[in-house]
Length: 333
Ligand SMILES: NC(=O)c1ccc[n+]([C@@H]2O[C@H](COP(=O)([O-])OP(=O)(O)OC[C@H]3O[C@@H](n4cnc5c(N)ncnc54)[C@H](OP(=O)(O)O)[C@@H]3O)[C@@H](O)[C@H]2O)c1
Image (tube, rainbow, N blue to C red; front, side, top):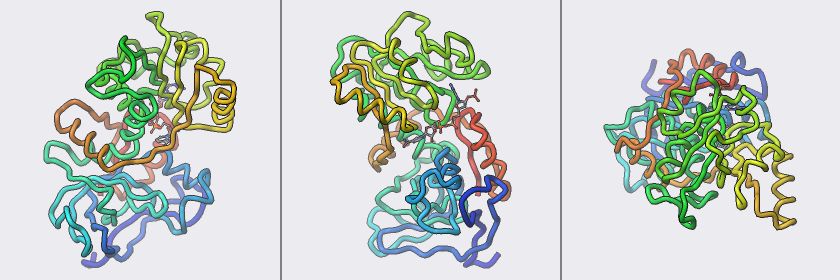
């Protein structure tokens, strides 16, 4: 391979799943003023990556085809743009690329300095690549949407807050359980039977198997009513959440469909005390820095479902589409 060419994985149009991913050789991209070039060590996949391929986010994403998918990467800076102030060649970093341009499934990727943070040596490449979308979504749900304070308990509640995390074995859910525990919440979680012990080991106080009647009606085994629900799954109607919520219970829906958006609007106009709130991740550099720090300090663990080399990225892609990952799916360059 020449010094100016890199391997990458891309697709040329909507649809086609893993079979539509093509292995190509492309020129290594060049930095603009405020950008850094990263030699990618690892990328993690998120459901949004294959949802973009399916066309579920059109016309917003992608901006154009062919498109190199994946946004959550870590690696070493090899070149910096003229305006870059705080990063230099040789720095290990973690970053979230834009969903407009993608670029993660490649040997090199261009990132904005403004979304890139240093990766301490205590944090492995797979752990770092797992963080941007999944962990920042869990963090935004619990802090910004729910008002909890990590390592300080709730901001406006005296009593321990009761949190329910659905799909707690997934990329977002496994971080949400741990961050809710850092906020001193009592955590109930749902997952499949095979992951119950794992989710308990992440700190969940009560765990429900979602395929049992108790799991599907979300009833707290210890008789609690939930103040906060971080809903990381889909298809649960408001009528299932409602009887399990405390008087001011709030469902934070991270995959809001038409039903939850309608319910949310209805709850607002009827001044309902129980609410459902759609969440869209607005990633912030300082929050990425914060969660990288929690991993460094050993306060936050990443569960890795599987690691795949870039030359077999389609296996990772198919696994993500399958929807049964335990933790994060990693592609190593
Ligand atoms: N709004 C945003 O900005 C934002 C950001 C991030 C993610 N999201 C969305 O959030 C959702 C979750 O993302 P993710 O990365 O956590 O997904 P993921 O890692 O693919 O989730 C897979 C996990 O979900 C579990 N699961 C599936 N259905 C379940 C159910 N009914 N009850 C309990 N567990 C269930 C699976 O367990 P089994 O294998 O046992 O079935 C599996 O372990 C996706 O729809 C994603 O697009 C939105």
